[in-house]
Image (tube, rainbow over all chains, first blue to last red; front, side, top):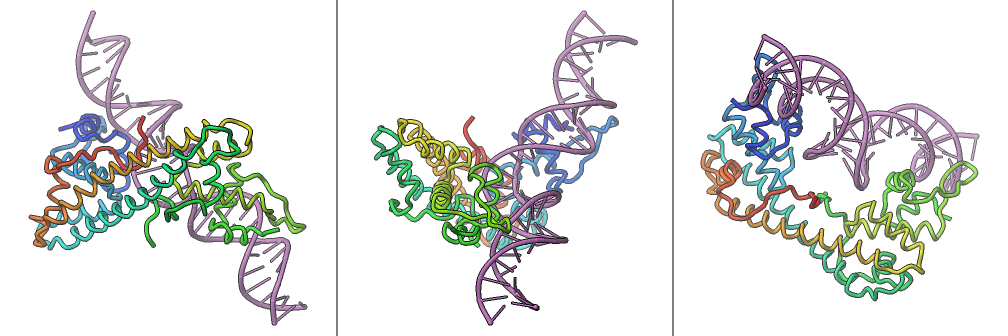
Length: 146
Length: 146
DNA sequence: CCTAATCTCTCTAGCAGCTATAGCTTCAAG
DNA sequence: CTTGAAGCTATAGCTGCTAGAGAGATTAGG
């Protein structure tokens, strides 16, 4: 049996985060020691490692909730899991595309900076005037398509 | 003179967001009509367009605050503005690198999905076992290097 | 066995960057 | 003059944590 601290070390998840996951119902409530401290077994470790891994891959907690409930039903078809992963892939691809446009624009900005005064700084100038941009980089980075 | 709604339309910034920017001091308090409604002139429009554009390029509000104060002093050297833009560029580049790794992993997941049941779904399997991954994709996406 | 150091507990509040709601007032068109 | 849209303030909520306070539990050393 692991204490919350050991579990955190084993999975690379911080202790308050584990408690947070329990609070939002992503991890089930676990048994407690005589002194009310959480104790975790192998299943909890696996589940938390799953969550951690999915978070690392950029899945939202909502998506992870769905994936976990799928993982709990091995007999069901995996189409739903596949769909979630595909949606995440699409999301990642669109973020990459957007970030590439930003990168191009930022590179243009810094390359053209003459290192003089603000008055003729390309960085400030471009920010002041969108028409100086060559790429389409509207919509903030974190945004999800509507 | 523009009302807040017209300003929002002109810049593509939502009305509550404009009020929020004023609240956090990114936009100065503006004049009001006899009936206490905000009225904006050309300068406010330019400033908000600047903010919007910088947000689109992924700058944080803190960075934008700095850029705005630089833009307000055209006589100063532009090294600081250049540094902010370069930092943003570096940030964007590292995000792209991370997202590429995620994309590769997600693609492997969905490509190998046999469309059977969850029990042998590659998606669930990979999430359950990090050692099945080929790329290094630790650290969540939004993270800033320490 | 006692103490000190280190966990762990709960609870609350905070971060970015908005967005939404409630309940009101003001304004412009007809 | 009335109606409906647009504006006002204030507060709370969103995601995914993180930090802090103040208390109790556990463990290692003496």
